[in-house]
Amino acid sequence: MIDKVLIANRGEIALRVARTCRELGIRTVAAHSTDDRDSAAVRYCDEAIQIGPAPARRSYLNIAALAEAALRTGADAVHPGYGFLSEDPDFAEVCEDNGIVFIGPPARVIARLGDKIAARALMAEAGLPMLPGSPDPVSSPEEALKVAGDIGYPVVIKAAAGGGGRGMRLVSESAEMPVAFNETRSAAQDLFGDGRVFIERYLTGSRHVEIQVLADRHGDVVHLGERDCSAQRRYQKLVEESPAPALPAGLVKEMADAALRGAAAAGYVGAGTFEFLVDDAGHFYFLEVNCRIQVEHPVTEMVYGVDLVREQLRIAAGRRLSWRQEDLAPRGHAIECRVNAEDVRRGFTPAPGTLDVFAPPAGPFVRVDTHGYPGYRIPASYDSLLAKLIVWGRRRDEALSRMDRALAEFRITGVPTTVNFLREIIRSPSYRAARHDTNLVQHLLAGRTAAGHTNGSDS
Image 1: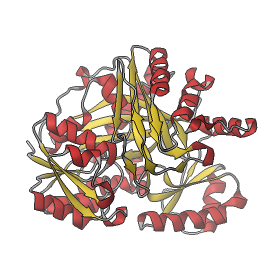
Image 2 (image 1 turned 90 degrees about the horizontal axis):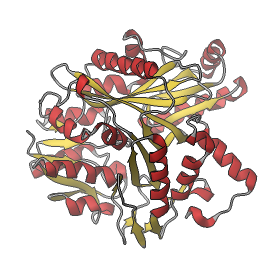
Image 3 (image 1 turned 180 degrees about the vertical axis):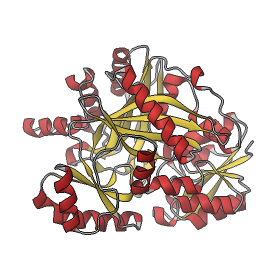
């Protein structure tokens, strides 16, 4: 088994990984920037090492600094968490070259699935259903107009190296295309160092559903059901749940079988997520593969009773999966709300500052994954995620009631947060009736604007 893990991340995921390591008797090293020297993860881990100044490109995105930190502290493995370098094949390769176990897929798998164009081609060969789109990179606005004209508007321009909702632009008509194409290609180059883009049909009024998979180095692959991630703003997820409500069991099985085929075709190893769009006619289409632990992994853990980080560590150590497919069955319903330090009234502007009061909710079947504490100073340099509130219930209606109660109990002062807007989402009639799609949050925000919403309770 692994002896010492360098956690190449920050925030709640760093603390969450460290907790499972402690249960397994694995020592941990918190790699941190100057802004995170007083973080909860640094306080919790067995050791800490500073890797650079606050800007992520000089710390959490600095491959050389992280590799050196692992070697200096004697860590025999690195857990990248999510975001930052978690899906960077160069980081995985550097770890491999230095004899450090990278807790994730092999570099070659990350490289192939991280290229959205190559991933589409691979998944199409494996028989996964695809939305109409360009099989190759689109090189000019003129070519983009032709492709969009052939498949029909609306379309979305996507960065080949994008992911997590970044590097995407919706285009509703041909007049928008030239500017949208050039801006997306430029943004892709700036964000990912790769200006290649492709075009895909945009599915209006769809649901975003994903399948969690685990694969070991011995050729065994299992899935742990589905998650609905349709409550999102600008492609960033706000509320997730498992199982996905109001989906036919046969459709879920088809998606799960497709994910297993895709994982086998890619030679996948570790924890991964296959993302799909589902239309109102019950057809599903492949979106992408996330080669890492997901932000929303706790809802799967709550429903399946499986510690996904523990499985990541076992797989990375060369162990076989702890579970066979027939052993895995969902129980009850779980919902996760992402609590961000953002000002809803100012367009969800990130709101760094000091937490004067931070009192998470508690009670039966309530889990809070957070790095926040009273007096914690939220840095301006990083993502605004402050906490993940997860609840479980025997049925969805019970889980919804429990989530509403738990959100109402959350006490945070010092910075504005999204807590009350999350209550609006889960209380909305369409969400409660499981008739929502990826446009839900947009409709709620439009309703707020029409009503002249100025309720100070958002903070």
